[in-house]
Image (tube, rainbow, N blue to C red; front, side, top):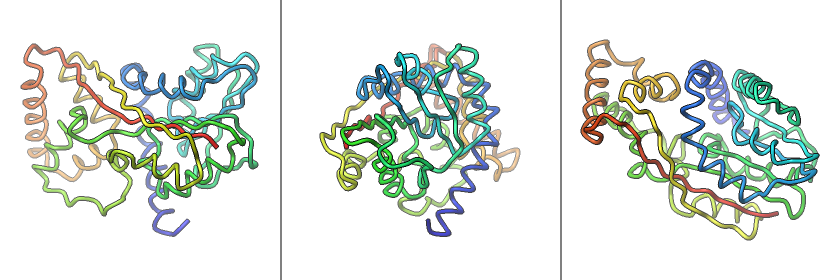
Length: 281
């Protein structure tokens, strides 16, 4: 991997480890929010019996742990760049009595597995953060058995994801942040219709499908929304850290106003949209 991409990878590793505590605190809310996307991934790869399944960018454990419950004699390998996130995944597995899993801290661009190892691969909201997406896709294909299935989720366009833009839009407006270089890792990097499908085709996958799936971030209150965003979302925290205390308060007030305007009854349940892309080796 090129040096500048390795630098991005190291920054991400530090960031995800740093924010693991926030992910643990908000895990129930976030996992409920992301469940429809995970359910569609599971439906597509159809895990069963003795399947050996690889989950990439596992975070705190989903959809890998639910996949593990579908197997009668199989196993799921959870991988992530951040060991602190996988520690939470192991705790969640223990709480739920799920034993047919292993975890491994590794980089998707250098998967430490032999060719043709896994029956299926799941990856929920990982691709847009991979420094080299094509290299990552090639590695996935390499370790997938012939005929094996892969399914991934990426976020749709900003206009369909107010749960992100309510905060980031306010931050960008106030701090006048320079847009990142084209193609840089970020939430909406893979949002273009057909983007991942084309990537899957380039690395040799076939029978590719793309489905739009909606979710709902059920914060209930604007306070919970702001708390979750500022304790889980690394880009938001990084941006706020560059602002003065007065500016932070201004951004908070304007974000609250935007959310309250959209949900005047105070019941904050924010729609989201994601693409689920499937392919076979």
